[in-house]
Length: 513
Image (cartoon, rainbow, N blue to C red; front, side, top):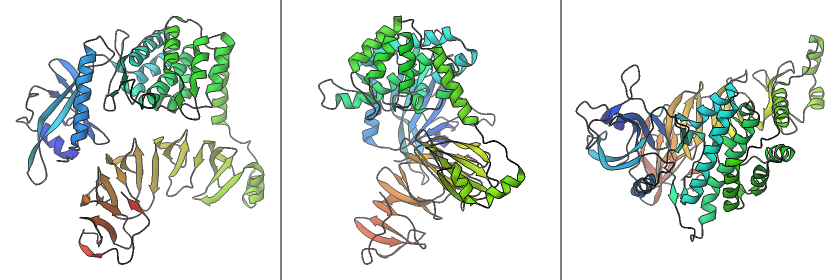
């Protein structure tokens, strides 16, 4: 059966215990005594302790047999690799472990995963923050050498982690690194025709992180510039950074970094030669050549100055004249939007930002794209990801989302990460966790959502109005929607009642399927 977050919470909070073998597991709790948890996609995770060791207990909300089989397979692979002194943590798959009841009182057992979180470990991005803030180049250098050794092991292991980034890596107190979160892991044969294509994401991410860490050793303050960039979040190489790394390596003769930059194809986001990457990583373990720190500091200074850049002040009389003539603004900017809530969206070159009603730049032009303000909120695009800001430029939602839609009428934000959709309110508070695979327009009172291959409708507060029972579903229009039920198109009302056959007048263009 498909589970909800609340059903799983009800089970883990049950005083009598509903675990088959984990009856002595202890959940971390907040100030109110409730279990601490996070939801990502269709998985709920709890920090727990078990047998005097720290773990994360994960429960897949979708009872998808194929996905469950994948989790089991990953656990077997990890168990085998751990015996070889690998860079993996303990990862156990427990079938039919947690007894869960649905809203109708029907029971069923859910599979869970236990993933170790070693005592005293910190996420890699936390270590980056600490070492760079301290300017501790020696700690960064030690961490870098360990990362290169881990990267070589990963290449040799034949594993595909599938989601390499600092949030999926741990730094242990003894300086060792461990990979975590294996939900996308695969083990494939070099004889497979898709071998290189499947490995590309891992290879590129390894190259990204090698370049970034090497730059941080020479210039710790550059992490402020790189932090939040796809270089440290996703397997996407920013071609605009590559010339910087290459020049910084050329000036000091750092041959392994020169080689890695040459291996990257930024247009296709691939790494041309995995074995050559491995050789460069081995060289970097022993290489003591730093990148050119002066060049990197200059780059940081330029970016900081650009972000803080504002136009020179002008007299009130001049400001008034500028507002009365768009032609004056057109001399300064390539594109000028309409005045929306006393704010004007503008662009110059490939940078976007905002003016106030006087024509003064109040939000610096550093976005890749920006939308008009509506009810004090606007969507912006930065480094390929969407965020939501207020009229002071404060981030309500950081630019980490693949899709973002702000509806001021309902005060709701639709967002997507890693193909999963959820809803936030105007202040960035989560209203609906990222639990849906698809989500239609939020312009209607009822929103079409999809879970796996079934579709239904929810309200803006997350209330399920029509359960996901349809093969396909379309957005509501004038209080009616078209769905596919049992192979036939029908029109329904907001309660889910069938009104008529839909094929008599056609199907709307907008579809969620």
